[in-house]
Length: 507
Image (cartoon, rainbow, N blue to C red; front, side, top):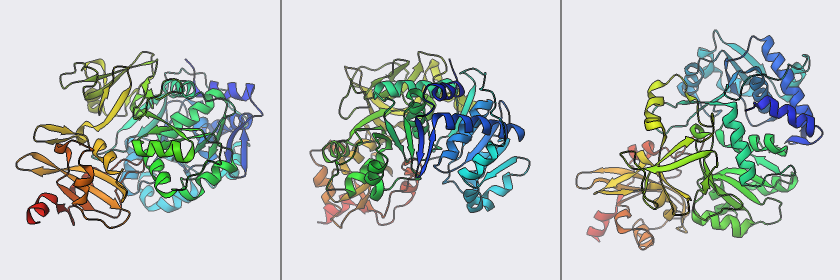
């Protein structure tokens, strides 16, 4: 096993002059990234930060995030990647629940969130930097620290899951889990030194950290950091920086395909990787832009991802095949494996050590509940086909149980997004005295259309028992910073909800 520091030093020694990071006009070679990170270790060590300390990092998408992250890793400290979109109690909870010894914060974010942060900063070391020029100048005043001599099993990261209900849980992962993710990602997608990976998803999230940054650390390719995702500048950036791939969440791809109808193939992007790509969006990405989506299945707890569509084993509509270092099964409610093609809960266990989470930080109850019978229980519904390809069906807690039938919101949402007048959609349960639960389709319309036309559109596309009884038009679907639908908000808001059964009776 190895550590991030050893991998970083290895890239600096073998590809020192190769560009590692691009950010607007700034470029850092692997040698420069390594040197700055080791000097930042010394800077942080002078502030009393050392092995085993939890340190909250509040920083936008910029090279400073990576330098601070690698710098902390080299001390054996644990980076707590704070969601930059959090405010109020949600932000304070992340700082306090992880028992952060220190907070490293970009000044612009500190000023924007000062009132929210100040109540939890007392007694903690606070390190504020203006920008790269400021942080790098302060770091270069120190000699580089020695590369970390710890083990790959040592803790590296706490990332809080963006739960749609209840308080988030801090997922503790080690160096080896991150490195294994990059190793297998680079092999599944044939990522090589000449690739340039565009990163616009927030760096505080598992997706860019494990899929993009770790792949680059594995093969020595280039990371192109963008501050945020923008449909209007996406292909302009792709051409400007000669990007060859990017990581995604499904919402990003849906935005591209819905707003760029004319298509664009004048770029060097060949593939993208992530989760949540509906079939119609999948087809459009390939046909309109010449980009191949590599859908995978993963979560922070399972080392980022456990199945994926590789260059060699690729199946449209699936989440791909299982990583060689993982074991993935689908269980029934009694924790027994189900036959191929039968839905159940996706469960995971590692074949190699330290590739899954070390645990939920300071949450033994969650650890116990998730690790029943020596398998990590994801809480997700899915099924495997005869060839070992996994299909994601949605969160188990989000499954709608209508009159004895189990209905996946994800499947129904995918069908709704095929509607030419629907921009976005979500499906949630509504309590019902007869069926137990009924189905509500919440829709963002591109243009006005009759609510009852939704049923006629869906007829023949889905089973009759899945047809929604209620339709509600909204301006936008509420989502977390990581694009998960906030279903509880949709269940609590029934403003303007139309009962299609009653509409039909009155017709």
